[in-house]
Length: 301
Image (cartoon, rainbow, N blue to C red; front, side, top):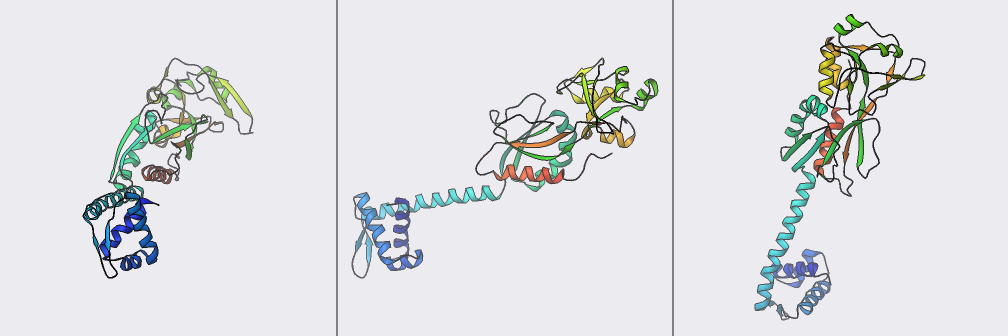
């Protein structure tokens, strides 16, 4: 016997005032309703109803049990409604992790609109450049810009490409000249982001499709892409940067692209989140929102 089902049937019998009325309300046969109540009484070892051919009445223990049934079944219904609301309306705390420079330069462009779209959400947006274990540190979703993703149990949704470009300030180019080929970079001051996979070598694809690897060196490296780009803006050297960092500088002419006919390996923007059988509405809403935002080419220059 399914005791929960039997409890619901018993409650319907009492509320409807009889077995026949309960059977109609439940779309069940009279005999099934009667059998479920009888099995419930047998399982409890107590008589809940006094039956006659014309009417029934609750026993003393039946009255007490009915009241408890109402409380339990209403609580179950409330819990189900809460889950349904949660599943259909993103709510609660959403914890997001992102690289520092991406959070500083990009999140402010779309995060306010996202939060206005989902007012029942609270957001904890954490930016850093160290390795973050999303599951161990209890993040709901992470944003990553990378060429390759490590093997993991996380779900990865690619949102868009992030091209890499070689840049310098006009003042630097005026003083040190414009490199014409990747080999010319040996004579220039290359400023490196120290958390990149390669800090002393750049790989280019030439206009003819040929690959070339070029050694680079300079007098500054930093684990902050912002520090490196600020130094480049100040005319201290050149660097390879993601377009989302420098596209506004390139549009304004504060930076110039070097070797435009040679292509650096691009990166991709991913949303990563733990693999669950039922994707939470808050994560789905966030990933869809950011995916739609970056479906447009935001970093052209």
